[in-house]
Structures are given as C-alpha cells and as structure tokens.
Length: 242
Image 1: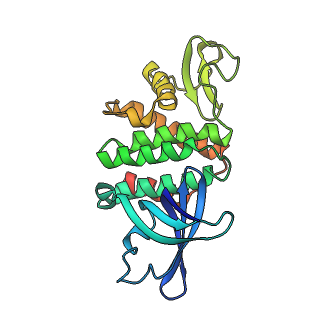
Image 2 (image 1 turned 90 degrees about the horizontal axis):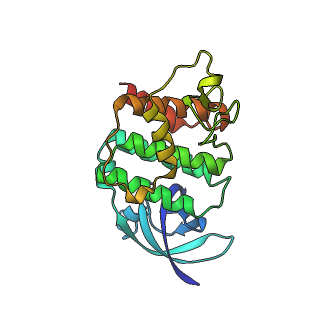
Image 3 (image 1 turned 90 degrees about the vertical axis):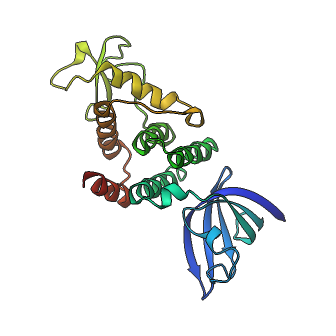
C-alpha cells in the first residue's frame, strides 16, 4: 500500500553496499523503512534519508515489517541547527531522549511536542529552555512527574518555598529544612514549562539564574528518577561547560 508519512529520522543502519534502513519517528510511532540505493552519491534520496532529518516519505507501507521507500522530501533542513555544534548537540540529545520516551509511551502528542521543540530551536529560541520544557513534559510520559501543585512532603498547596530533586519536588515553608530556597519566579516558571504550548512560543526572556536553577534541578531529577543515562546528554554538558 502506497502511503505518505511525515516524520523525523532517529537512526539509520547501513544495508549492503548502497542501501540503508532508517527508523522514522511519526505520529503513529516508529516506522522502519528500507531505502534501496540511498547511500549512493547519485541517489535523489541520499540527503533526505540521513539521520536527524525532518521529511515527508512516500513508502510502500507494511504493518509490522520493513516498509520500502519510494521518495523523500525534506520539510525543513534545520540549517541553523546543523551549522552549530551546540545546537546539533541539543538536537542529538532530544532525539535520543525522545527515542527512550516513546519506548514507554505511545502518546501521539509526543511527536508533535518534539517537532515543535526542534522547530523553535531552528527559529533561534533558547535551546536550553526548549529542552527543559520537553524534559518536564516527558516526565509525565515516563510516569515520574513530580506534583506541580503541592508540597511533596505534606501535600500543602500553599507557601511553596523551593524545589529539590533529592526530595522529589516542591517543598513548602513548613517542611523546609536545609534546602536552598529558590526565587518564587522559578516555581512559577517550572509550572509554565509543563503547561505551555510549545508551538505558541514566540519569544523567551528568562533570567539566567532561573534558567540555570531549573536546568540543574532537571538534570538531577532525571538521574534520580528516570533511570536514563544518555551519552548525548553527557556530551552536551561537556560542550556547554567549555
């Protein structure tokens, strides 16, 4: 059955001398596609079947089996991202993270959030903020999202003073012990990250200290509660610290 699908190539595997198999993330999940001759320099599908490509694919679809590529057309070349080592590192990390998330959730909304995120980075929006937004949203799909409305220790919905990865979420004034109190704007921003529609973001202006606090919290929270240890994340940290 001939079919057109939109998707993002999350991996590719050589097959023979000139062909390859690509795994394409779509709204319906991951589709494996055999791309005959696509490694050849003369192939019209060579560029459009490379990893980290957002494209439209015409395929002979086979449910539960490898589909076969007929043609591919790039939707957005992501030129800004692919010309910047930092941005391509963010894209690689988000791709690896998303690949792990969809193993645990078949929510089609993950695809839309992921594509919206990378397109916002391509537009020039802050890659750290977009990444953190996706990380918070993905926690829900992974089943480990902390409560966004109450103290993790007593359940109080008032006087939230800080957020702590070791304790697992928000902490109110009554339960505060030796945790570092964060700016109230940080609490509000974390909630906003979860609820915001990524496609609707047109500008990002967030204090650097708030961004740093949220990012460090998420790094530690992912380490504590998700069980995901991604090489692309370690590489991104190395680049960002240089």
